[in-house]
Amino acid sequence: MKRGAPEAGGTASAPAGGGSSPAHFNFAALPIVQDRYALGDILGDGTEGTVYRATRRHTGDAAAAAVAVKFFKKTKHWDERAKRELKCMTRAGAGGHPNVMRMIEVATGFDRDAIYLVMELAPYDLRGLLRRHGLDFSVGHIKSYMQQLLGGLAHMHAAGLMHRDVKPENVLVTEKNVLKVADFGLACDVKGRVGS
Image (cartoon, rainbow, N blue to C red):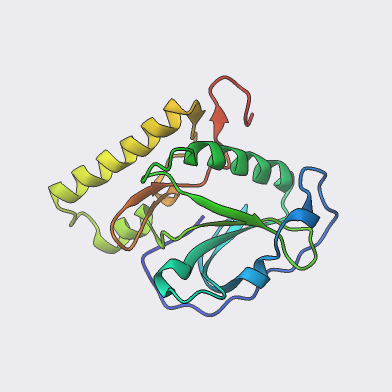
C-alpha cells in the first residue's frame, strides 16, 4: 500500500462494489459507510485495498471526526484476507496499545457486497517520511520510532500474533508522531488459529 508524506489530492468517491457476497460476512448487519463517513483523499492504494482519509458525519468535533477507511478490493480471496485482517486487528487492538492501529468499526457499501474497515487516522507512512526527509532524522527521533515499533510488535506477540509483513509502508505515523503498526492482512496466530 503506497502512502507518503502529505500531498494534495482529489476527493474520492466510494468504490463501486461487484460480485457476490461472501458467506463470511453478514452484510445486512453492517452499517453503510457512506451514511456515517464522507470519504476524501486517497491516502494509499495497493493491490489489496485503497485507504481514504474520511470524516465522520454528524459530529461537532473536527479532530475526533478524522478517520481512515480501507476498502478491500475484489481480488482473488479478498474476503478471506479481509476476514483475517479484521480478526487479527481486533485481537491486536485488545488492550489499546498506542503503537498498534486501532479499528473503530467495520462497514459495508450501498450494494452490501464490499467491506470497509474504519480505523484511527495515521496519514503518513515511514517509507514516505524517509523519502521526504532522507537521513535527516535525529538520533532521538530514530530511537523514539524504534521504541514505538518494538513496543507495538511486542504487544502483538504477547497477544499470540505474528505480523509477517513489517516494512516501512506498513508502519504508519500520526500527526503527533505516534507510530502505528498496521496492515494485518498477512498476520497469523503463532499457534496457527488465525491466518494461514
